[in-house]
Amino acid sequence: MTSLDELFVKTRAENRAALIAYIPAGYPTHEGCKRVIETFAKSGVDAIEIGFPYSDPVMDGPTIQAAAEQSLAAGTGAREVFESLKHATELGIPSVVMTYWNPIEKYGVDRFAHDIAANGGSGVITPDLTIDEADRWIESTHSNDINSIFVIAPSTVGERLEKVTSHCSGFVYAASIMGVTGARGGLSTGASDLVARTRAVTPTPIAVGLGVSTREQAKEIAGFADGVIVGSAFINALRDAPDLETGLEHVAQLVKELALGVREGR
Image (cartoon, rainbow, N blue to C red; front, side, top):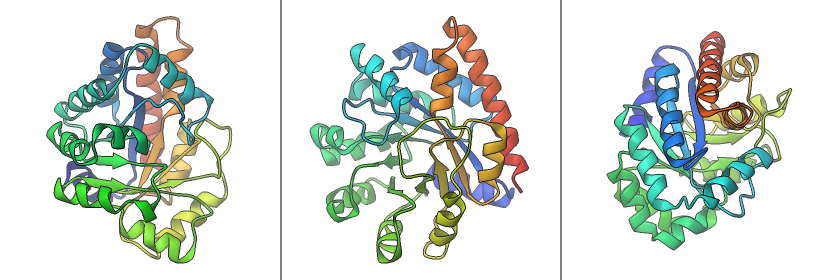
């Protein structure tokens, strides 16, 4: 059982959802990313996603794309991703890496899974890896005792939904909309339906992402999901601040608001 598995046992016993925060490795700088991770840990985040910056992020909206470009321009690669992951796990926060498939394949499938575990990581979210092409990856995650987390969308139905979720561990990543990441003023009405359909085919916890940026949105999702994933809102808080220290203060305040939201959902 990974620390992520243990987290969802804990939050279910407390009858609440988990707050999961995303930050790309190397953003706003390599050391700045570590400061953000520390702020997450101190302010009430339950789990952390470390993004592996990639040049063609098909699931990511303009906010995360811009952050990834900045990170890549500064030379962020696998070493920095694993350093950030280790920094998070050493703070006692269950943490995973979110990455597209190309960096895994380039790094080496078995080596990547091994190094996730070696740096204390619970698992990996692979948004563009189809379940039909995932046999080798699933085998590697099993061999290294880490979670394999796949993404489902409102369009995932029937046997396909059963097939994908049967290979998920840690949690199922439920994309709330058919689209890309980014903070939004309102949430899709299809998110609760997707979670309900998913619960009917798997006991694995379900975390909802894409579009969450406010306490009220976190509260709404926490009413029906096991986890609330927030990413772009934190990047916006850092980007719009005049300096890193102010940005970290804004991140801390946002975490505290979102943490209240996930606890008010039930």
